[in-house]
Structure formats: C-alpha cells, structure tokens
Length: 169
Image (cartoon, rainbow, N blue to C red; front, side):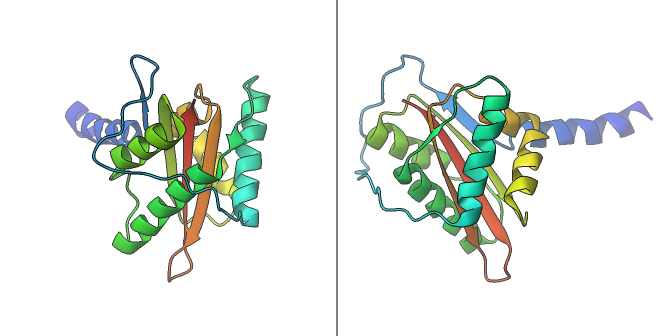
C-alpha cells in the first residue's frame, strides 16, 4: 500500500522539480560566446496579455518585498521564439533551454537565467496564479533577477502558449 501511494507522489515531485529551468553562473561573469552568433533584437510589440502578465509578475514581486523587473525586448523575442517552437511541436517543453540561456548570456551579459512556461490559460491572472501555486515556477518569480521578458502566442486551435524568461545582469 505504501509503495502504491509513494510512487505517484514521487512522480509528481519530479515533474514539479523539472517544470521550470534556471541556472546561475558560478563565477558571476558572462560566458564567452561559443560557435553561435547572436544579435540583439530590440523590436518587440507587446500585446495586452503580455503587458498584463509582466505587470502581475512585478506586482507579486513587490508584494514580497522584491525589486520589480525591467522588461527587455530581446528577452521577449527569445521567449517568443520558444513559444513558436512549442507550437510547432504541439507540446509544452523546456527543450533547448541551454540555447536560449546562451543567447541571453552572450547578448545581454546575463549571469543567471530562469524560465517559466505555460499552456492553455486564458488570462494573465490565471497563468500568474498557476505559477505562484507551483513551487518551481514561484521560485523563478521570486528569484534574484533584474530583468525579464514575456511572450504569449496562440496556436492554430486558439490555445495560448506562455514563455516568461528572467535574467540577472
């Protein structure tokens, strides 16, 4: 009986642990550029839901005594690329996080990078509430970050994909 209950709880704990990604440089200096050449793309137009998510994340951080985060358009562009990737493979995933992280370290000098993703929430409030209720996503929202970006894209069936990336410079 104990094994039957323990196994599903263990699986749930593992899923929560791997539900969000974040890393921090050990030496606080940006990593050198590797074989990929990244350029900063500062052109980004925010939708209402993207602005609402950004505002709610900052309101939450302020309510916890944390600094509000500054939006950087390049981070939102990287986030948008990940939304488009998830839509193309029709699944929610943190796959290729290392490439997004390398991009932000190389272009912006990030020393820490985190990422929250979500799918099929219809409002900014519902997705931010879900992240607050998830220990791993909440940890990113409360993390020692200085800047962030947000992208929300709609798949062909009308479902929303969210990618919220955080960095510390």
